[in-house]
Length: 236
Ligand code: CDP
Image 1 (cartoon, rainbow, N blue to C red):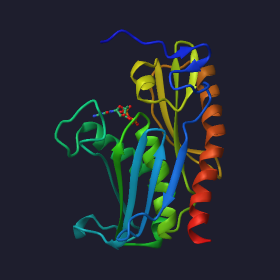
Image 2 (image 1 turned 180 degrees about the vertical axis):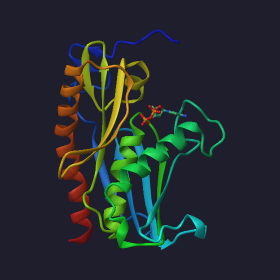
Image 3 (image 1 turned 60 degrees about the vertical axis):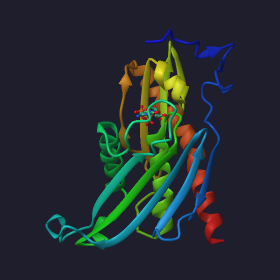
């Protein structure tokens, strides 16, 4: 492994942010004409497109649930999305894992009983990646879903918290993610502050964990506002 770079210099991060500062986030609703709902999101240098199709009859038929809709989710990184690896596209283990955890987030907020026997397809395409793409993907897919009109209990958001040395950092970029001592992506349904995803790479003490969660929720208030503004802007 390469020598570890300094992640904090004079209290600032390598991209000039304060430890608890989010990257800039921009959200556009409805960029895709053929999707039921869609969103384009820029989160720092991450660029993400999310699209929702359905509800439609579940295929193949044997996977249909007569009581409720099933959710399919595909997270995928474009082959050109990263400077790091330009291997074949298509699902690798990491993409399968992220697809699974993203699907579980939305199974917990979509009112599945509204559409028995059907499926709802969620696609998250990472066009450009710079760390934290699962959180960005969830944030974008939540807006895409809301814009599709599919009934949901809440509009979740994702964000990550990590640690460099003994310092907690909000919203790690790729460099920070590579060299951090801990990285914890989180997804939350804000109405009840319900945690829908929590993963952890590395370790945090109990105290760091609580502080990290508080940081994530504080950032969440800003992310939720941007999601709402994007959705309201669309329907004004
Ligand atoms: O993106 P996220 O932080 O949710 O997931 P990760 O698996 O912790 O990956 C961290 C970052 O590494 C990603 O955001 C990408 O920027 C980068 N990465 C990549 O460039 N190529 C891969 N095959 C996997 C990850």
